[in-house]
Image (cartoon, rainbow, N blue to C red; front, side, top):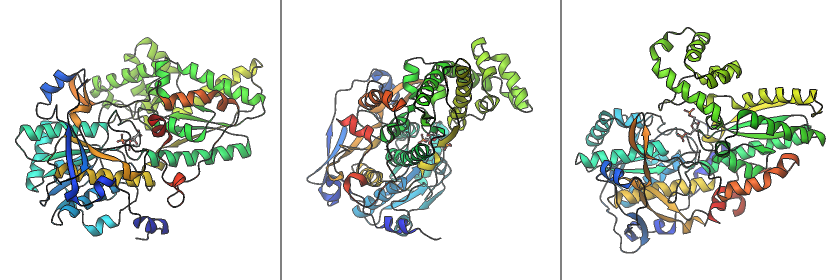
Length: 551
Ligand code: FBP
């Protein structure tokens, strides 16, 4: 297969490690510290996670080595949506294992968690990993969205581990996958299995973070890729001065991607789902606000602009949230009848018969294409797949109607030519930025150190990420410490909570302080493409959100 010139050069990039992990393995010392727990669900968590709750935080320092140097067999899976840098996590893990003991082996279970359940794997060799260093995508072993959550699935994983003499399994995934990793660690201990389980924080959505995890990997590269594209569109808009661009951005629930790209590019409007929910903004309210900004810019003869829309928006607008939740309940409740429906009209009639009156009138008034999208297959959690709902088209249609009414009343004199876009998959498999390449490699190497320290039920954790990589702090956080109890499918379950945008946090406040000016005055910033070679300030800068959170 032909390899691009850039990829060849990226193979030669040596990801930076925190100083504490970069010396001899014998010089890495694990230090333990038990912080006071301040978890409201502590007693419930203790009773469910009997073996893994209450463990100390571990940090790695320099000193007399405490890591085990014996040969280890480790399995690794990539879980969920692609995020730039996944290959480097595997590379860091591989290098750590081999540095410690060249007889160690790394097995990559294929197609995500299903690979572990079904015992399908390939061995990661030096030759293989060298073809994937510093590259995007998850294609080295593939990924998948199977959830490991039933006792049968845990038992199958234990069998796989036993058959392959695994000492440990590393789960590279988001909040759900790390929740499953925590429960798997608990299950193995309960069954007296010595197999360790270690998680790594992955997701472009940026919603796996908390007081210990500063950021999930992949976010930096994804937002830089989207910001480049948004900047290019802005420059085009500012040149032709005739289109309004409505850009939906990935992020299943949280709006971190929309917020970060707004901070990087200064669009006219950026909606933040968490604010929409907090302010209980209706669809009409949102449409009115955007239309007012369009009319204001038209007064300055600027019939162009850029609007950013987070993918998850529809689930945060109160009346849409209600409608979606009713549909989510109706489909499984009327499963057999729904399956027998021939086409959309019959499905629609069935849904309409079961909706509350408020949701019924909304469902009847949304464009038919959007109604169809709301009835598409659910994901493995029974939720609507927001990436398949064309929210940008929904808003454009409503704004067109509103502007027509405003025009009739003499309140709008411009010309509205809208264009819709969706940026998601374009950023998920991009070649990792230097930040993500370093962060991921370090997460993988650190995962090896956690295994060699004999730990299980931990997530690989690097902190102080706005400092140069050499100064990053390495260690592990007990997954149980990041969990709370939530009701899922009618049962109380321990889960890692999704981190949504904090509307009282500095990143949102910084955006909120600037947005009125951006709405009417063209203030676009053009970040350009990710730079891999060149000055530090453009090659190694972490996301603005992270920098603001650290200030
Ligand atoms: P993860 O949470 O698994 O990292 O995936 C995130 C994401 O990219 C979302 O932004 C998006 O809604 C979803 O995956 C799309 O899923 P799919 O890859 O199944 O189309």
